[in-house]
Image 1 (spheres, rainbow, N blue to C red):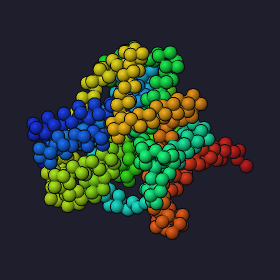
Image 2 (tube, rainbow, N blue to C red):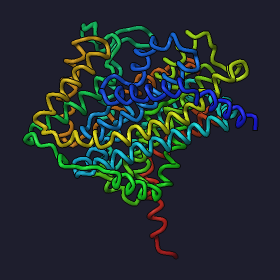
Image 3 (cartoon, rainbow, N blue to C red):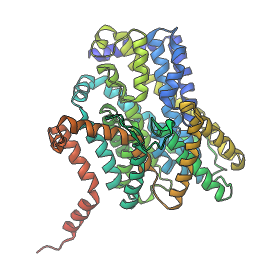
Image 4 (cartoon, rainbow, N blue to C red):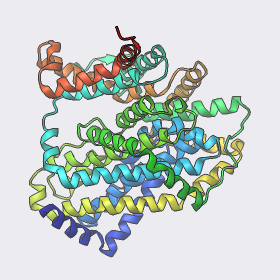
Length: 500
């Protein structure tokens, strides 16, 4: 009851005119940031952080968090329309969102993505409001072994629960692991696979890889096919939005499962990217329409978008309650709190109740405002499809180059973007899946670091990954996911075996 009373006080803070204004401005800026490939929520929040120094801490954090919500919404726009993920966690949305746009169903795909994003975020905010103490206690149990277990589960889920050929999935993932190992060894400090290029000391940035693999690769394929932009005549109106909303309730199980996966990944903290991949993979495996995934199935949009938003929102919980950021954007927000003289942790809920509950209330209102803003602008986004691709391709290339350059202000990144583009083109032509490669680039170095830290603490014993109930459960789930096709075949044989 006390939490509910505090939440109402938070709403009173958020509904002040100035706070409502900064909320709207934050959402609009966030959508623009999400649309621009390579910029990202963390970079956008970091760039705009100085704008908030003259504000009160509550207004400042409301604006920055709303930039985050807007970026989460905006990442789906370029994924659906151009097959270019605006954010890493939007990669899985391209698998079915872009085929829907090519079929003239851009409005349906965008509406499903935005609505699913809202549902995932709302679920996470309700969870933060009601079960914060329990979740904070759970997050404290995660050491290096548990973190590796989460990454292991994400990798195994993609291999075992994907309907792509396992060999091609593993081969693509191995390329990603090799690329993720480039740069300074985080444990020993030795150089690996840099070939004398100082620009590679920090390795390949996954945003550069994503922009190249998906953006440039897609443009090269489209040029080969004759500069045709499939789905160019797509139209959108309120009727499409309402029809999509009528269809979404039948996918309630997918949404609920994706919410749980996203919250778990956001708190653990694995992040929105593996949450979206895992949710998509599981949905593809258990859905009745699993064979239609990748060809424009709306469930393939709902699953990753719901999980990504649930993970992105729930990542703020360990940041507020423990001072441990659950995502790069949460880390930037943590820096903002310290600048404003606020120390995240359990005492924040006692000493700064107005601030904490004002932020939580802004999560509710910010996502409602974000949904209304992006749905209102859906006609504008869908209208982009009517522009001839011969005109829009150079514009996309320009934005990709700008996005790649702004990551580190380096022309070397632009060159690497083009290299990844050629790699993406070759892999697509050979029918190798790109998603496992991107997943390995994003999580490979983190998984390696957690694995080696675990072995150092156990003096080389692999038993540490089964040393307690939590890590044992996660590793067991990973093994089940990896061998799921074999397990499924065994169950099928048992069912069909004639009785003696």
